[in-house]
Image (cartoon, rainbow, N blue to C red):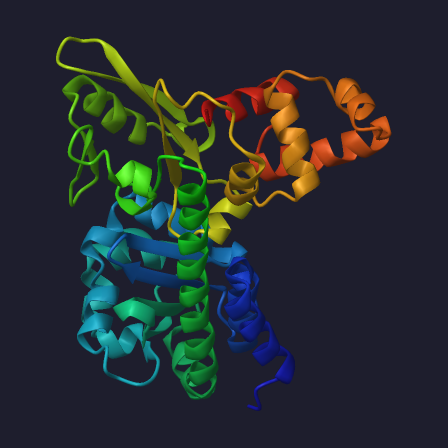
Length: 356
């Protein structure tokens, strides 16, 4: 089967714009007869999974039910990481294992997802990248797709490594922005581990925080307990949290704001799940336009509107101040709501004020 040029184009487009990987994975899966695909990136900061829409739900259920802890698919694939091609479930497991291992019998097979094909790609900075095509009709179909997938693999490898480098540069860029304006902020993954931190946040590691291997830890034990509790709540991913930090005399000395990375922000910064912003008594200003733009991928005009809403202005007041039509401001505000995952001015104002 000849590789369509349009498919190659879609893959390289995802390489340049990592947020497009879900649609690219869907296109590859459709081409080879799979239901969908996953791009799994394993770095020192943790695992990031980008799923095509058709397998997003089953991938999330697989993780939530704990099957990734016993995933012999990935373990055996990594054992053969030097193999320069795709391997199927039948290459990695015997038929008897597929019929008896709980991962298959209790989850994959009942969902028609026990036949897949995957490959390991060496990413940038020693990242391990796994591309998996999921839920072929049967094991024979998965085997027939291997020849085509192996020819496509060099394009996928180059594009996925490019994505990894782009996301690294985005993280470096946003941290540089925070450094330039003196903001104490860290980028955390969903388990609370530090991916990157501004100089101002890093300078507090000895006095307020400990950069632990499992997650960021807070020296104030009560605050650390609240931080762990917040990470375990489902709603933290959409609403965020604010945690007071106290000294040994129980006097408040700072507030740690957890702002969830949603939609565009999560796509831009890969495995970043939260922005942890440290607010201290000497840093009470509303965030600058640069910070708002960096956090939520806002245009300069959208950032001005967001900051104004945080100051308590109404859209009408803002329009009058800047000699704009109310329709223009409402249009900008609508885009800000979408990018910040808020629905009304009060929610946006609370979100912006949390970034103080």
